[in-house]
Length: 69
Image (cartoon, rainbow, N blue to C red; front, top):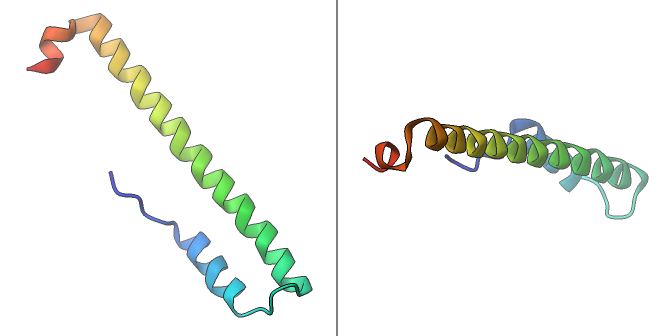
């Protein structure tokens, strides 16, 4: 699995780079960027948990020997 940064986050970062640090727009876009990053990391964590649960279910169902082959 590749760690790809979503386009929306890249677009916000590019826009943020055009503003002067400390300006009203800079603060606004910083908050927007943090919300997008939180959402992205939460999605990754949920997907990871789902995959872990599926692996555990497969082990319980088929036994560890079948999974290691």
